[in-house]
Length: 285
Image 1 (cartoon, one colour):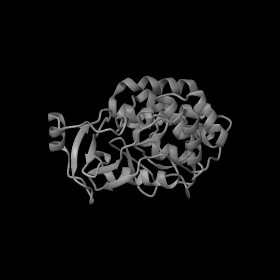
Image 2: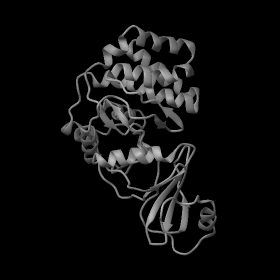
Image 3: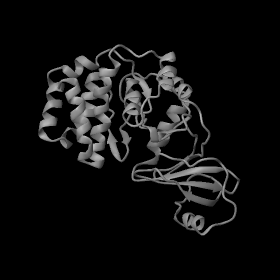
Image 4: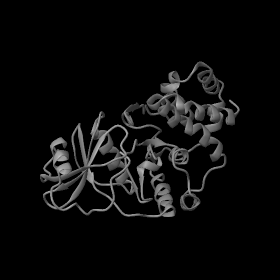
C-alpha cells in the first residue's frame, strides 16, 4: 500500500461505487463497528486497500493481500513503540489489517529527525525474531552479530539467482573476496529500521506506512529512500541533526541499494538490471 487517500471527510450519501466496494470488502476482524462506506484506494502494488467509514463515524484503512497481515501489524506496532509516526493498528487477522486513516502534512526536516530518532532504538543483533515480508516476498531475518555477513547471507544471496551470470559473478566475487565486508564494516548499531522506506510509503512527510521491519544499519532506510524518491536537503539536515552520517555513507549506499534493486528485478523484471550494473560499476566490482 502506498496511499491512504487525503483528508478524513467521507462522501455524503450512498453511491453505487461505494455500495459495490462494500460488497467486495472482506469481513473486518475484531470487534469493530459495521462498515457503512468503502472507497478503493490507489497505489498498492500487491494488496487491495480501501478507505472505510465505520458506523461510529471513524474512517479507517482496510488492507488485504497475499501475505500474512499480522506481519505488517507487528511491524507497525514495533515502530509505534519506538515513537515513529505510523498509523495505529486497530484490528488484524491473518488476512485483513485495519489501521487508522491518517492525513495531514509534515515537512522533510521533521521527518528526517523522526527517522533518525527511530534509528536510536536498537536490538540485540541484526535481523528479526522471524522472517517477514518485503512486498510479496519472504524477507529473511536470521540474526547475525556481523553486519556484512547479514547483508551477504540474508539480503543479497537469496536474490542472486535472478541476475544474469555476468552480474551475478561480479557480485559473488565481491562477497567472496571480502570487498563487501570491507566496505560495510563500519561497526553500525543494529537499529530498528522501517525496511521499505520508499517515497510511496512516506505520506506527506509525516507518516510511515507498509514497513518491513528488522534491525539493520540505519543507512538501509536512507538508501531505499534515496533510490526511490530522493533525499531532500531539508530531510538530510533534519536526520543528521540527530544522527550524523558516518564517513563513507555515500559509497555504502551503493551496496545497500543493490538489495531493493534485486527485489525489484525479482518482482518486476529486467528493467531494473541496469541499476544493478551501474552500482557494481561505480563500486569498481
